[in-house]
Image (cartoon, rainbow, N blue to C red; front, top):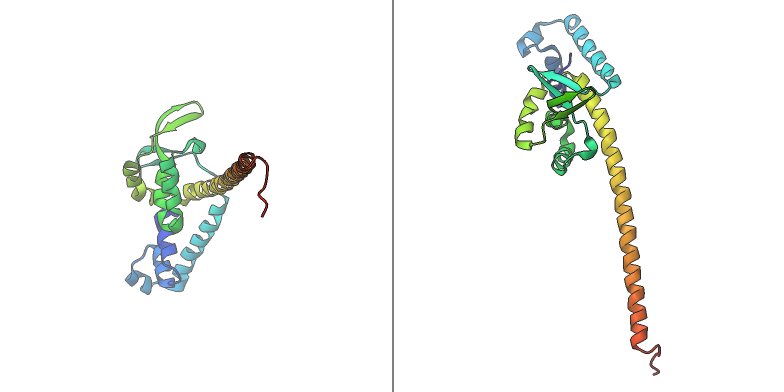
Length: 197
């Protein structure tokens, strides 16, 4: 299992192969130096294979963390403006903000009935505190949620741009009407006559 925390640490290691190996194996610097390449290569290969396997993950609605059931936001179309702003502000540093993003998208389940469920209402002060807990989550959950969320975000941006285009066109039509009304009004106050020089 690759946890979100391990994934973040691996990404933050950048091109430093030694730090990457340390994250993957969980060994200290001293322990890592004493190992042979034959010992380390299978661990690195398993990590790479596991990461590749995460590309196939589907969204998981529920997860259990420390004995508490968390559910994926069941109605993203009714997301509050606060949720949307917080999520959007975290996109600039996606990797390091993944635990916070997960704490917004997955929240404690408050009730369930058949195929429907509700989660706690969003409170950034309360829910962003779960970010450290989400570092322990298997990347299976994270990858499925991120694929779903990124597709949703693209759809929302596309819809927002269409809405903005429609608003702009509407504003231009209003401006044209005002100009036409102004011209009609101006010509009627002149009596329809133009002055001769």
